[in-house]
Image (cartoon, rainbow, N blue to C red; front, side):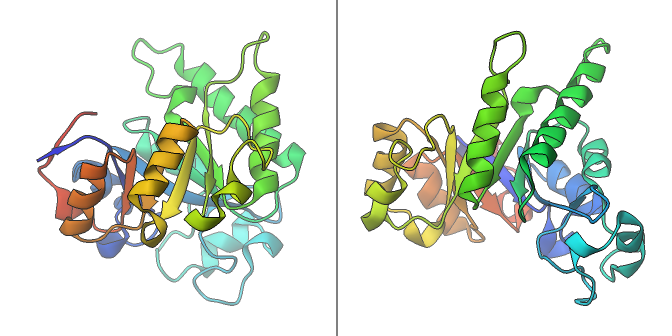
Length: 255
């Protein structure tokens, strides 16, 4: 079987190595993931950390109300605390693209600082003979409409009048019967590049709407069986998010 889409390690390789950890990212890439998905939130001191839930693993400390220094000590899932975004990107080192699921309610200035950080990372890489990071490798998305709209505005500001080339997406859930409520042109999301939707909501009609009518890429989550992989790969979706990268090891990929 040829895998003609991105195989996305959902928070790395969580089924064996935990969510958003160094080892999880390393093992996901080693096992064949062609993209890594991770969740980012802002700590109280303005540091982007890798955290899916509003609370850290001890269920007592809120991510947004505590500093990065607190994050180093409260996590029970990893010995050295929660990774920052910069640390996570250092681990991945541009070997595969990165899908950033932006959580919480960051301001426009905070989102601008995030994009500036990614731009600076790529600018520093340009000085290398074989740069590992390019803006095209970053896929930024959120469930929050306002975050997506702000990212679109930031991207349009561009660089020397050219739009910044990172990808922007909206994460569902999207009910196919309510498609008209979501359609990018009616929801002021004109300009997004992709949609990520929960697998149970994805039908052939939905795929045709997203890819055909609106010309967007479609990522489907979370697929943890071989049958689901075969089905959605055959349907021609653009990204498959999974917690179990090992189930799909050995498949030939086009990336």
